[in-house]
Image (cartoon, rainbow over all chains, first blue to last red; front, side, top):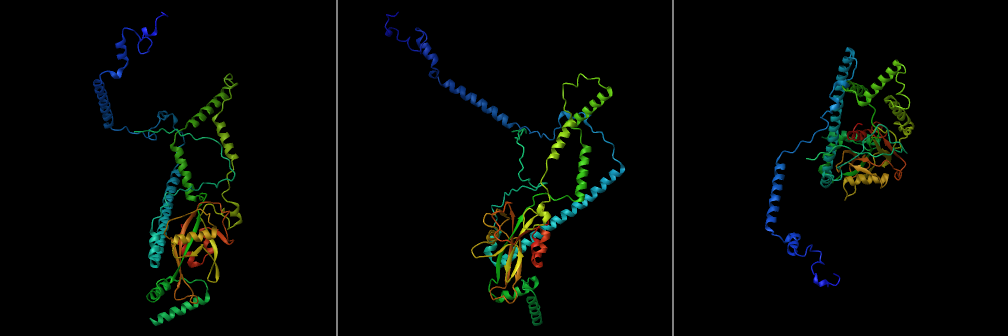
Amino acid sequence: LSSWLPQMVPFRGSHWQSSLLGLRASLLMRAQPKKKKKVDVKREQAQKDRMKKKIKKLEKAAPEMIPIEDFIAPLKYSDNSRVRSLPPLSFEETERRVLLMKKWCLFKQKQDKAEKQAIQTLVAAQQEALKELRLESEELYQAAIRRDEGLFPYEREGPSYSPPLPGYDPPEGKCVDITKVYTQ
Amino acid sequence: MFPGTSGGRGARRERGGNMAAPVSVMAASARWGRRFGTAAAPRPWRLFGAMCLLRPPRITQPLEKEEEEMAALMAQIELEKSQYSDHEIRKLQEEEQLRRRKESAYDDEDEAPGKTVIMAQDLEDKWEQKLLQFKAAPRITDADKNNDRMSLNRKLDSNLMLLVKQKIGNQQLWLLPQVEWQPGETLRGTAERAMAMFLGDRIQAKVLGNAPHGIYKYKYPRAIRTEDTVGAKVFFFKAFLQSSDLSQAELKEDHLWVAKDELGDYLKLEYLKKVNRFLLDL
């Protein structure tokens, strides 16, 4: 075997061939793209069409409603074992409540009226100022009426119960948001 | 018509004699304005831009009596309509167990030792302790107690506005900072310049729009009046102070931060009336 020249066995050395006799067959088997192309193209086209039809069917169906988690009572509260046991309200208590509600109604009505009146005076004062300005000079008036683009959106922190404590070191921690997000 | 004019002039002369302060009588000025309009120069009024700088409140206002009663009632109704929460159920069960253990007197000794069970009541006590340890900043500050009107830490639950002492004519008056309008700038620019003049450039204030919120019109006393200038119109603009740190500012010493009800101590009556119109009663 060692005396054989390498040229005598030309195809054995290459890795494309596994058997000496089946030369043609092995090459053709492995080199797939060299097969007939039309059938493949047709098959692929048919597959794509089927997928598109499925997608269209899914899209035509109405989208699933996103459940509102607040309106669904969890099952563990459905049995009545959690009902609070309190003594029934006395007559005086109900009377007091009704009278308080009426007083509150009146209080809120007065508050609302006062607010609306205040807003009206504000607007009236501004209209008066603009009228006087117009009498003065038209260009200043036009400059005043122009919309202020930088005004909105305006963000401001509202008042809290107690003022900020100087030198307060808030405790460390990370807030992880675990709300479920639904996509349609 | 003649008796009317002489009467009007006579009356004004008196007033001009008594007060050197600017006279603003809206009806009289309107009448005179109409008569002057026919004869005088097109712009007899000098324009001023004034800035009303407001420091928004930092804490909530105390509740009224009705509001407190209502809040208590609402809490009570909410409690009555609610059901037991997990924590409350746990607490009830543990109380039951404790009671049973005491009654049955050491029947289940083998359960208790070795395990230290944290009861819901212990948790509540622990939370209570933690709350008591925390001390919030006081709502009524030192500046409130001393009535130091120059500091910004005074009435934290209401709007404070800036008043400065300015020389008008030959008098020093407490006013909202104002400055004369120069041709070439808008009135809002004038107001911002007034603010910058008294508080420095680095002030962060949000001016609420281009339009003036109020106006104060007054005529000069007859002595100063010339053909060109009859009086002055002061246009007020409002701005919210955003930065609470004014260490770099305050070029002048006589400035004050006052709330709306204290304005009456410093401002003249007519001026005050006009200013009160565009300030919300907070």
